[in-house]
Length: 387
Image 1 (cartoon, rainbow, N blue to C red):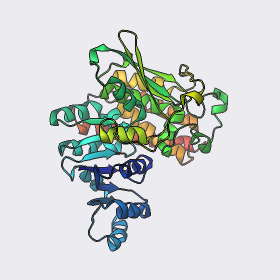
Image 2 (cartoon, rainbow, N blue to C red; image 1 turned 60 degrees about the horizontal axis):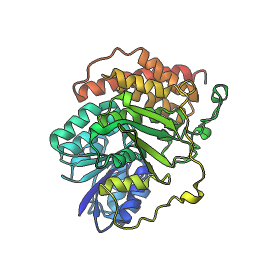
Image 3 (tube, helix red, strand yellow; image 1 turned 120 degrees about the horizontal axis):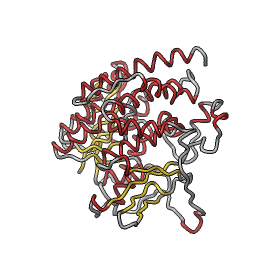
Image 4 (cartoon, rainbow, N blue to C red; image 1 turned 135 degrees about the vertical axis):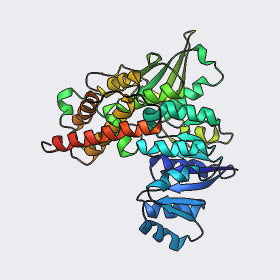
């Protein structure tokens, strides 16, 4: 029976991962669960799944849980979120953390010979070269959980990498796809969180609205599939039915279709292939589906995508800096401290002040990350005074 540890168990990906595990209790057991704030939800998970270990933020949360579950190993504190990733050797670690805090746990899991089902795209954006090299050295897999990268992995099954012409990531276009530039000045947080097709956490939903999420996915695809940036394209597909495509050198296109439900790519990642049992998730009815439409992304109204491509091509610390600045700016928007358009403006300001340094270690990654966060927070403070 495969042991699964879920980092970020009470978040959107974490809870959907547990939904999948309920369908396959004969194949999986839960080794570890983590949360930051949602202790009551974690207690319900402990009751149902009986994990060996759990991680919470502080001693008060630990004491609250240990009263009811004295046999569970309960860790707390910042370092525990990294250490738990390597606590169970050969486990499958689902990294559903948000942001660059997912980097160290991913490395820790790899060092413990754990394959990683990666929903934390920032890990590969900020440290992709180091992470993929480490996984290859140890001999473990980095399995994509994002629907787009899962779709590409499925389309590539059975084909040689040399036969691929390009990867095509689809984007819904977010809630502001049809909104003009002037109107974007006045969008609210509620507007940005009203994603038209996907159910996601708040940060990734904001990133989807700016199209930064798609930019992060382009860099992630570059590392996952060893594909040059010139061979990775993005197309807007508002219906979110085709999750990505692969074009081959003979002109053929393979596409992966499905209802927009994250449990499907999560299941594919956990099983490392198709389920042999019928899943309860929504099916597509092609007869009633209607038309599928496609369009080019608007690089002018949504410059985050262009910035991500530029940072990916420049390499070095640029993707790390872009990611860190975006995390700070997106969180500031979620706190209603800055406007929607200020998010990408702040990312651009930080990148303009960065002098690229070579990245050869995790220390280099964290130094670039620290630089970007400190500067972004300064800019947020200045802009916030006028918000």
